[in-house]
Image (cartoon, rainbow, N blue to C red; front, side, top):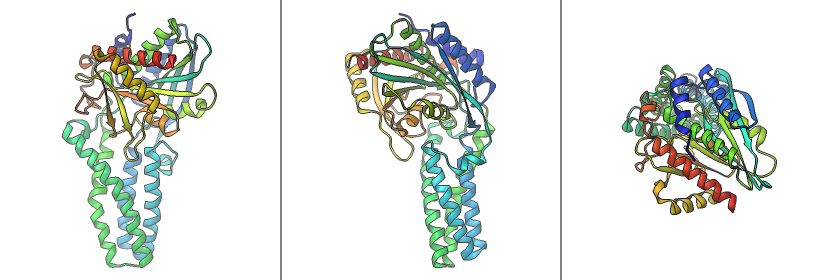
Length: 389
């Protein structure tokens, strides 16, 4: 049974091209997703929702709040320090909420646009014991400076950690200075300025760059979801409903998955999720994540990890392995944060690198068709093993 995945990769990355979150091109990708599901004989559903146009801007605002807080502490004495403590307290909580897909005040300060999810249900051939959501996002990221080399990406990880620590330390420092009226302590806040400035620059710069063609990220994952839906429409699983979801606005904070969960998380049969993202990179095997989350770790469902390990043992030709993924997030991170048992397939190389990630060179010519097809074969085997459980 042949795969159609590479045809979908070409259409998304070449015919449509860059598909920035909330853009007309992202909508065109959703329309292609819907057309192909309907051509497979499936009933489709179109879910509009609103989302920020930038996933970086909330963190830029947080860094700006840090700089304002330092200024308040220096020039307005004790009242300024107390005000700075309140501002940074709200900001720090908002940063953590933003990283784990929860509403927060920073979101109200970012421009929003319109996006959409498209999904279809492949019914089980017999009685359904479970729902499995296969999700591949349709939007593409911008091309930030920090993603242009492994060294710069390592620097970004360091700055991310330092920024979070600086937000927490700043809140505590401003509160201590204000409550105890420590005049000398006000000058300690200057030590935080370099960190806030670096975070500000690194989170403002991405929105000045173009969107990628997104052949690997994530035409490859969306294409695998589509190809699997087409296969399963012809040969459905016996006891597993499969929901094929093309999500919008993953790149700005998995807003499509959040919108989908708001409507469909409850109900029966119980839901599980499999995210497929960046699975066509040169040099990448079939990689499923062992942990996700930038600060607080979220772990994939043990039952899905066990099944993946079993498939890997049975199919050594598919070159499967597991690695941690903690630089950013996937749609499965959003599902995990809502308590839905999930697993992600992210095409990390054995060295933990995503090829061409958020770079202008993420084009169809650099997609490894073999990696795409091996991932599809692995996920299909995993679904069949789950169905037989």
